[in-house]
Image 1 (cartoon, rainbow, N blue to C red):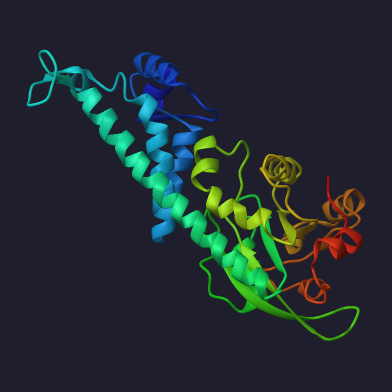
Image 2: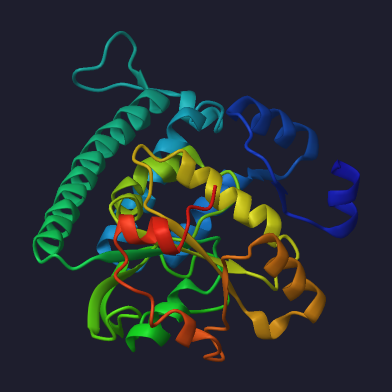
Length: 310
């Protein structure tokens, strides 16, 4: 590995797996350049994408929780003794000083995340009192969730062909025609943070306030990028994450997106494997009429008409 890195002139090695602090230090000693695991890479991407105060807060918390056990071995400077008032013996190491500062910061951020969680819980309770049913859009990152929300609600949520383009949940009200009564029916549609295979535990904990938007919804639209070569594994990853949530999400309807970018064979395969699924292209505004006339998305009605995807 060290030879390959030197040959191509690499200054960074990324491992597609989680590494322990000891593994990172040992690999860096062998390779001679910086080593990053998938968790740190994902956290870096999240940090670049965070725009709102809530998003930055949650990302910083996840980064600090990831960094804390990795302070040891960051260089000799971290182990030098520093004297001063209140220190014991010859002094306190810079490592101990930084660890204590990070722990204090984590404590404050966790408190703010708890406040954010409580605030969003109050907003959900208010919506529930209005008896307006809610639907959450979930899916693997870059499946097109924000684009679908914009198409259905005329919203202007940032959408781009990139990983984790949206970190904050966005809720919009939408009016559709009830397929049974043919009367106007209002419900709330929420765009959520994109999932990924083996979502790092630090992100699950930091974004628990966001993920609760999924567990509290009356129904879930699981959006799948059918044009992605690994769409099967992406479906499994999303379902595994939802299965691990403390509260089981509501009835789930699978919706395949980007149907305009696949051939007939893949469409046929998906239809055979998911006969209850819908097929759309949010970008090209194709098939969205199959979503708009969906009846009142209560748990009971969705169990009957949508079916639960296990």
